[in-house]
Length: 316
Length: 153
Ligand code: SF4
Ligand code: SF4
Ligand code: SF4
Ligand code: FES
Image (cartoon, rainbow over all chains, first blue to last red; front, side, top):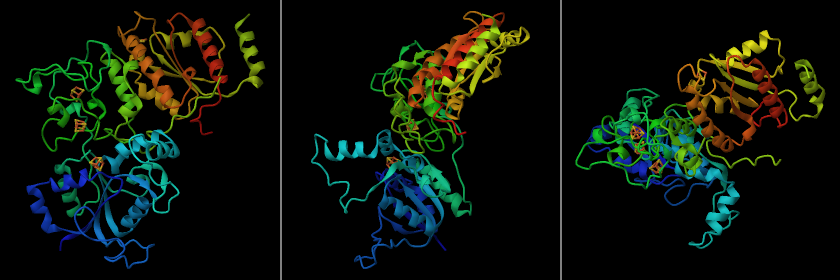
């Protein structure tokens, strides 16, 4: 009997669903054991009946063993959808960094909802003003843009933007074998990076990721100097390893560009910004010169209170 | 003014400060600052009872996370005390702490904290008087701020 799966996207970009499709050959082995009973990205299954005949208060989510959701939660509609999914599945998987940590959209948490709405939806110079926040056809925002586990219980988290197909297979296989938990090993991107490290840099200002790195394209990565030590901000030291799947070199490093931190913190409770600032000073770089550190060092993890509007300092 | 009058002066004014009962953590390195704290004690020098000393082997091993953690879990202030530059038992632990301190000062803003809540001081092993003085000064500075926004009691 194949295991029933409900898959849905919330505040997502569809990259995570593409990653499921990207599983490739192993997907053929998995598919006979899985029955996707609902998948907004691929299956034409409506929430309120094919003709909208169901009452609008009752979202129709089929019963299933496994629920997979990508994307965080931005508005009441997504929240309702997520709560319904949680009610109808036994094991809930948060897929991708948006679902696990809030992801890129959670940058909005650096401002108050009204400020974001005014700036982006009302007064953006390059677009026409969008409907009013009070418009009944626009689902109201919830107070912050959250990760999935800030709204409902999550059993398994597969981070990454997008997550690597290898881990989706591994997590699904674990669930098929009756497990209800799975997680990536706690290692940093640096732990899996082959570049040359000397624990020091030339000092000075931290360069932005657009600046050219020094390397010989004819030579392998094991002949390139660590990106941080070249003075360019690389979030490898504070980012969970795994973006290259079960083997291989971290993806951005492969492309000879710095890690942006898409797999999120190495362990629960870590503060990547604090660790990264410490790490920059220990190779001798000037922490003052990091541009926009709060946003850049919390790039994918704005949920869970990591990004908030700055509290006003008491005036003195 | 003797040491005890200085202390009493502090107590008399307590009604006027914003945070009369602060929690101040002093992270001291074993070789200089902690020895100085010992000396302050054996010399009967007085400093406010709000200071809790935590001993580290060297300021070089105080990760920024420890300080941010302390401040975001309710400490009103953190002061790090180490050997004078050039005197570190482990050669350059204090130099490392100095550069980390810059990063910490920047990040206080990100956590909505006043810059006065964190301080780095060099206190040599024989400077018991300086240790007591620095602790009085830091406590006063923290008492003049409202209680930490992260304090839960
Ligand atoms: S984690 Fe990345 S790929 Fe997945 S929905 Fe979010 S932005 Fe898209
Ligand atoms: S900082 Fe970046 S380049 Fe250097 S070792 Fe870590 S991941 Fe590799
Ligand atoms: S190197 Fe960093 S940013 Fe790039 S894919 Fe890997 S974890 Fe993500
Ligand atoms: S031993 Fe005192 S600062 Fe290093």
